[in-house]
Length: 111
Image (cartoon, rainbow, N blue to C red):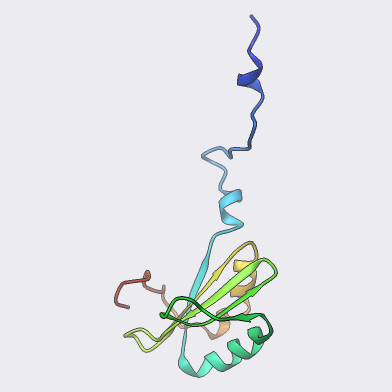
């Protein structure tokens, strides 16, 4: 029995449900920073800075393979820093030693 070409040849790649590698490469990374640690982060990314369009974002920078967004201070008194893109995890790892323990609250929620 001959299997039709449209069954054996895919026009696009779909990872299997058990293969999360494709999604993990672009998974965002978030952490919380105290007010006093922000000048160091902002100075580090100053050359890639861009004007944020969202009024909730205090600082934004776009580099090669990543976007970093610093959100205005939450009720906890800390800033949520969100890293997105292919290099999100590697960029976030640069700042984990300064991060406050705990998971940032999802955006739009009290935290």
